[in-house]
Length: 467
Image (cartoon, rainbow, N blue to C red):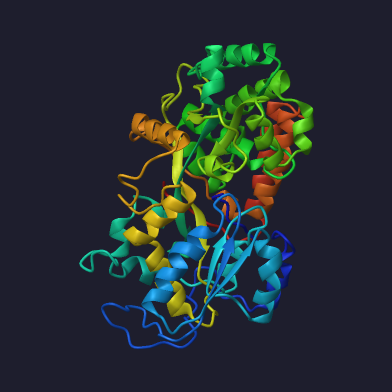
């Protein structure tokens, strides 16, 4: 999943340990690379020392880690056969790595993802991450005449900016929407709805069949649902709504698009959301859908691959855009959120930072990206790398949705990676809204109050985006 995390005193998993690390001025001088280096050449632009060990830490979640152990790490070892590549897989990134950052013993590459991911803004503020500009400006492995950045889908580099510099490589091109079982829907004569009234009516039909029409995992992934609220707000009022949320613009949370989105989703929650789902994890909810007990599930396009070992025969994943909330929505029904996600970082104080950059360059090669898609079923940000590969039913529906959307793409949100307190509050208030403890107006007012508090807190480094 595409969420990076935030600040020193309130970071996930007790990231306050990072206060032991001297912090550089936010947005100031970039931390210098460390570790041994060899001679920089056209084929070795970062000057990787051929025998220097490389340690790679991978979040082993829905994407697994075979893409690293069977594709990227062997490619690195083939290029530097004298180098030992150490692989570490975990679902607890912050818990595993925070003591190492505090002690100065950090790996060279990190897939910083999952619920327990680290706060990238905190790490940048402490001078702990390498500016990836040299990576994006390096020659591509596939075409030395082209820069790496030229081989990537638009917006990739920008999605990893912290204080105006690219410290994060977001690698997976992910689409977000409502996921359902196409065969179940076909058997019942159901079609995904395009308008909110039709969505409400369809949910009522699904409920009448004894199913839960809509569900999300309130226990550990409330962000699956707040993404839906954000996307609907953007479809109502345009992408500027989400940009304004990131920029802590006064009054944006109480603006008409956010209020309408919150109210629409609160109504779905009140009518169709079983209260037991607030206490369930994503795996439990996904299993319930595989068992034919759930109609729609809001998620990203990693879902199908994550469930591949649990999906029963006869179940066929498909994704639909979120329905239009009003007839006057600024963006059409076909608009979807599609963005680069799954962040990879290179610690600035690693023992082989040059190797870390080269590892990411290998990931961004045609073969590295294609191998990733073959292992995970997910498309990367490398243009054309997945062309010609057979697609699963879910990915076919994603491709169709992306084609139908055209230029109508809902933008990402950066507050998730910039302001931990705000994101944590949004998880809590989303559950309160969807499970009926607060109204849409209360949700908006309380989120605005939290955004105002973050904006007023001089200890929190502030970020800006233009679009």
